[in-house]
Length: 141
Image 1 (cartoon, rainbow, N blue to C red):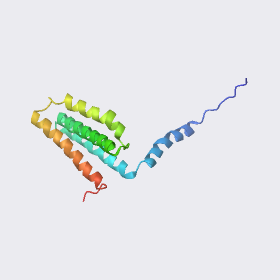
Image 2: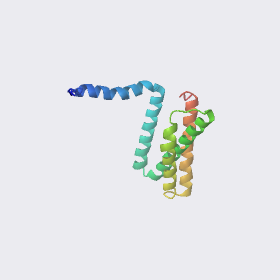
Image 3: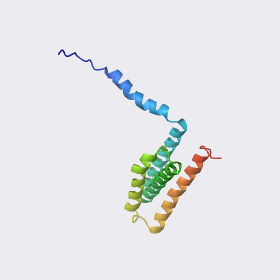
């Protein structure tokens, strides 16, 4: 049996093909969704920075925990009600809901009972606002 020498692709070719996948992901995803996700990432990042700067990191963790838990619950309920997969369902079930539950349990004694429930209310309120904006197609007015 004769073995033939296989020439590996050049580094530039490999790099090109590696970047094809994320680029096609961006093309595959709607621009509105990417913008909304980017806004969310920026707002969460700003919230974390402000929480550290103004000394309320535990409360911010409870807010974020309730945001991701409620968001995960709404994705799950929506998928069950329409009996169809929706974007974010698996990450909601396997990442956000467990993360939210863990965070809320872990930090329930880190702040007063009143601040704990205020933080949860803020997280739920954020979800209500996001839900309304989503149903309105991203329009504020």
